[in-house]
Amino acid sequence: MESGPLLTNLSGSTAIVTFNRPESRNSLSTPILVELDKLLANLANNPALKTLVFTGVGDVFLSGANIPELSALDSGNARDFSRLGQKVVRRLTDTPQLTIAAINGYCMGGGLDFALACDIRLSSSSAVFAHPGARLGIITGWGGTQRLPRLIGKARAIEFFVTARRMKSTEALKIGLITSVCDPVIEGAMLLANKR
Image 1 (cartoon, rainbow, N blue to C red):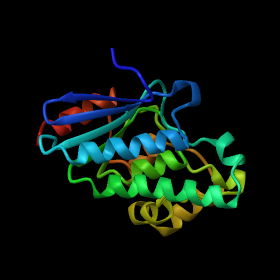
Image 2: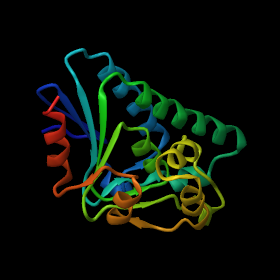
Image 3: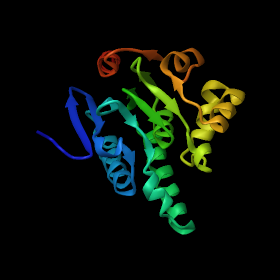
């Protein structure tokens, strides 16, 4: 059985990538971002793949950047970390395959930025979305400030960023952050992928 922080399973012309770091709530540390960048490059170069589906284990899709790691960064390292996250999200955006975020639970901070870079976002009914950086005195640096307003409007996005409030899947669907709610979300994603 495959193990590791990023699990990849192939189903026909679809690759399912599962974030598998339950001990850290699927946070995105530097080593994970490096590994994710390599994985995305490999998947993008596979002509047999038409769709990439991303999901998480347990009740977390992605919890965002690893906060203990962030708190230990100096200004130079912080810049490098931000650029690495931007590189990964840009690679995801440029991937030739259709990308689907199958958001199975908490989707926070940089994890939401990752989901926003996917072509389609589906969520389970228990999913929760937030950009909690304002409570920590930081703001997302991986493209969320540009992508979110395009999806839900400038005023809603600003309110979402500055209040750091949590949003449930019903509201996310209503305002266009996600395209549908389905349980289990991975089955909804695979139904969509298999229509291609």
